[in-house]
Image (cartoon, rainbow, N blue to C red; front, top):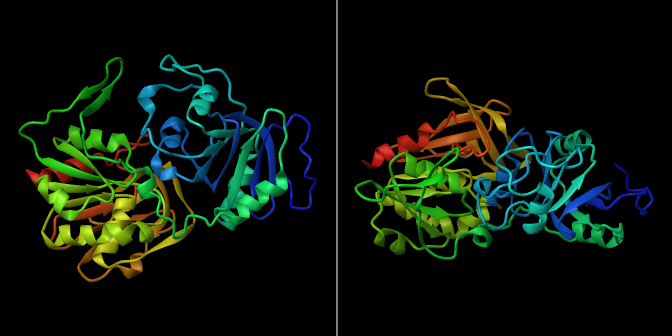
Length: 387
């Protein structure tokens, strides 16, 4: 990792580079898509599930540094894709990506990255980069790959410095579905793939897509719901016309305050109508905003599959999957909104419930993918409210 005063010429064999807005230059070996992309650098501590991470729309406009050194060695397959819309723009890994060693693999990770227009950078001291993010906060940067090693560092640095960053940015519209969809997918089983969920005689959930992961809908279906997915800016009248028994608010990228400009009025109206509501991640933040709380940008964010969360009602600790760079400010929760979960890493808010309403949200990802399954019960809790 070079300091801003270092030479702009790449070292021998370098075919990839990360240029941070502070002038730091990180050279490595590029893989995947050839080109450049700008975003916020973050780190993820999960040991498995890199394909799900890279296809999570919540990572839109972000460059993921994986702290686990061996990423890509189990290849890629179509079953582990969480969404076909924009996810992470690139990834940074320690070891060079080797040929796959999994019976489920259908493509090499390098080839899969090319096909999804995502840029990779290997041979990086990911411990040093992660430490920099932890100490200084998540930086804006440009990741670039050129097999010939030709890079205009000055231009890349200018791009990194001029990018406005995620604060104030509404990305939900960019990754949301464009039209309504009846969700058909069921849960996955080895050797059989994904089945089909029943759609008759079960509670109906309308899910608002702010950048959703498919496994959320699979878990709602497994819990016994029929799911209709609608775009982020679907109006209240359009939602009620579908006659839902409950409304789900999905995860997604960007600043919740920016997305809330159009989402919060709709959510407030749903609460006023006593509609059962369940929110995850961005959906949790939007529910909190609708209830009168505030959100803020985090120093480094929470991203990984090993985050301990304490459930306040009984003291149970859930090991959870997380991916968020913004958080609900627990100190701003108004009267009538109960804090239900907190992070055991930093004490930040991880859950709320609105008294007198069938409405609750959690900051983490109970659907896992990747991650532990401690929190699957939340889908059963929500669907049980609708029976």
